[in-house]
Image (tube, rainbow, N blue to C red; front, side):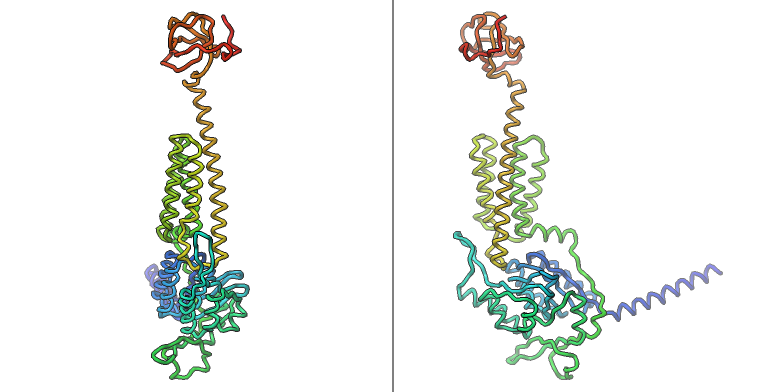
Length: 469
């Protein structure tokens, strides 16, 4: 009986504690934190989608996107903007930490968010489109393109009661501003050091959906005490959000790997290093380098399957690989050099940079990094192939073929069979034609089992160390 009573008491205490915990957890609001770092790709969008779905499932009151991005693919950025605008849970974009940027595509995401904030020392802007041509990289000044992009950004600014003029200047004049200017110009609503600071400042505010005339609407942040009962089509108040439990969504292993290889710089380097490693592995004994090269090429193909490729660059890469393979058969030397050059140029041209919203300075940094890395890798692997070729030639000189081309002296008349001395060893030999007298200098033409096939050579070309018996 005592045991039964004890078990009942433990069960009751457990139920009471669970009830208290559940009650407290239900009362505490939840904020979902999603980091958007690096280039925005379809993998980034998929990761954010998963975060949005999780936020819906737990009834989160707010989603915070922590931005630190130079931009990204045009279609991925547009898809992310549409997802943010259509979310029933408000989305706040916070450019953080100190030194972070929301350039180009990142600025579009910031403008599409219901709440925009920046940390001290951060930057937004640089939205002017760029064009990659055979003559170099330059800004696009076509009025058709500029008007379309500036109007897209201004529309999102208007939808969230932000400065449309500054939004257009981001595109038309490549404007960059910091948090103080952005707050003063009504581009953002808050300056916050981190997510918790942003939540503290949101305490006294409500997000209101208001009519904007002719069936249109816009979002506005309004102080709670100024709200009236009939104001706005929809209102979302943030009272009590300062004590919210912040749930950070982190990418899994698969998500992290896909995000890594979909980075254009990483994908291109994987392709170049993989090709060079594969060529070097085919030239050297063993299978380690071939396997490593093949794995890197497969990862690069997965990455380019996400970000896309340029056909011209792909053609150069394939041509360079074919030339490098041909070098393994012909040993001409120049084919390997041409192959390395083609693969390097193809690696630079294979990236579909025209479909990316990133600043010109960032694009030049990517291309400069790729140029230096690919040239260095090409030279390194070229030297490895050259050394491997030399090693193979030295190895052949120590094998059965090492006697070919050696000089020796006949120990008897070769009519046509007899004996010769080569390198201090006595060998059975056969004259390739005619008879060779005793004491003559001969050269080994080929080897037939344990018999050397020789021909007579001039005495001046014989081995000086060979002496007549």
